[in-house]
Image (tube, rainbow over all chains, first blue to last red; front, side):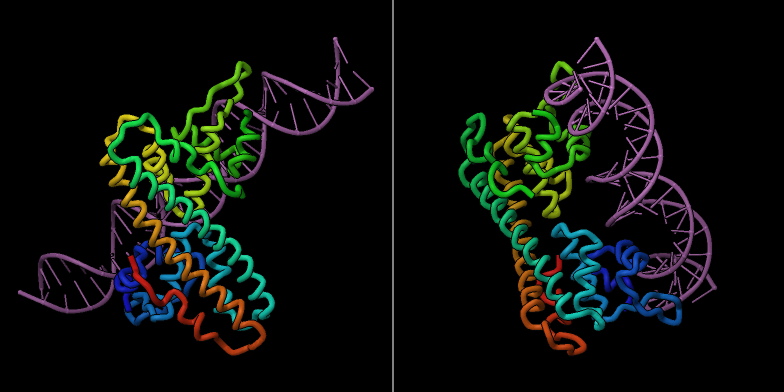
Amino acid sequence: MNIGTAAEQSGLPPKTIRYYEDIGLLRPDRADNGYRDYSMADVHRLRFLQRSRSLGFSVEECRQLLSLYGDKERESADVKAIAEAKLAEINRKLAELAGLRDMLRHLADHCNGDDRPDCPIIDGLAGHGTVQ
Amino acid sequence: MNIGTAAEQSGLPPKTIRYYEDIGLLRPDRADNGYRDYSMADVHRLRFLQRSRSLGFSVEECRQLLSLYGDKERESADVKAIAEAKLAEINRKLAELAGLRDMLRHLADHCNGDDRPDCPIIDGLAGHGTVQ
DNA sequence: ACTTGACCTTCCAGTAACTGGAAACCGTAG
DNA sequence: CTACGGTTTCCAGTTACTGGAAGGTCAAGT
């Protein structure tokens, strides 16, 4: 499939897809006319990249995560260690995201209609929880 | 408090904190010696920035979110609309993050020890769910 | 009083991850 | 065979930091 279709299916702009190829995150075939030719596996990689990038993982972290299932040579224990480390980070992100959601939920539900100078709940926003 | 302390408490490097001031995300006092002087409210803003940036929100989105509770002039209905829009995005992110967690959990639990060429669960990684 | 070292200041340059635009090639529809 | 949309490469610009130099500040030690 052409880059435009891969872009639609992955949610990434063509520019970004070419950039990911430049930095070695994927290696699509080329058709006889020189056009890039994406497989479904490529699209899966791209979707994975779209998601994990939008969730705040760096390109290098994404590269590492992709290597977990792409690299047949890698030691299983190694895979497990990296996966566990990322899991901890993901769980932290989940908790923070849930906190943000609760805060906004409260703002939308309770600070609507009254004009108090500042909503104390929101005033304490991001004031709790683990740092780093 | 000085920038170093604010950095510790917010989890952001001093460089980044100065940068956020440059682009107008906060406006700490200055002590007589010219040093920036951060209040607890400043630290709360910084922590909020640290979190939402690490969760994949852009600086402009963060600015908008901060304005929700900082801008006394803003219409309540306006606040509510913006908060609801961000909530939808946060819920989407939560679902994607949970998916990523399940995938990695599976990888760590089940693909450990055997050397099958590729784990079918992981092979289908990021292959499901809503795009955009 | 003086020095040392950690912390602060500004400024300017560099990096990461895109993003936009030009110029030219490809491919299908009329 | 011409239009026009999609694709190519290349180069420049943007966003969000990040590193480093050159110098001012401050608290501790001698």
